[in-house]
Image (tube, rainbow, N blue to C red):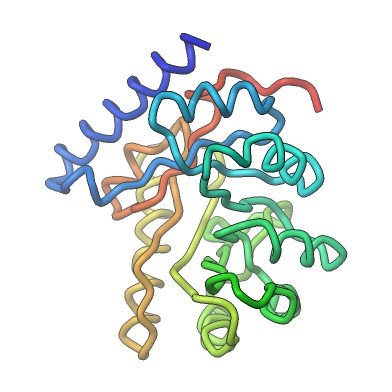
Length: 229
């Protein structure tokens, strides 16, 4: 677990360097540690190094992990594709959902958010690279979806999320992240108040920070290669 400590320090240093290069304050960029498939012990080790926010994609695995780690008061983000039959558990257990791509899912989350909890913080996932295999709504569909989600009573629409195609072409990466930022700015110009760009992972966080990311989702660079599911 000492490796997790060293890896977290290295990732935080990368974020700080990327912010310096972009003329940004590092406090503007939150690190979300992607802990899906990793043990509760690994999460506890990261929490012991000051990491508070963790990202999960598999509902049953996440809920079990949350119960085991309830003493730590961590912040849990759901970042994977979400099916209708899993919305109730997510609405009850998570603080954030990054992967809204259909109004039906958002409506279910709002209806199923337990009374007494604060609004569920949500982002709309946008398929900025247009890949048929990728989740996310088409950029052209984002304005109507955002307007509808913003009206739901138990959700708070915070921003947009994207996962561009893997590439070594930094200019292409930057253009994908810039497209998400430009879409967020256009939505705000249309009357919304979105403050979040959830973009950038282990291999491309620098490009994302350069284009305005304020949540980067990092798994491999913290925990290592995925354990088998």
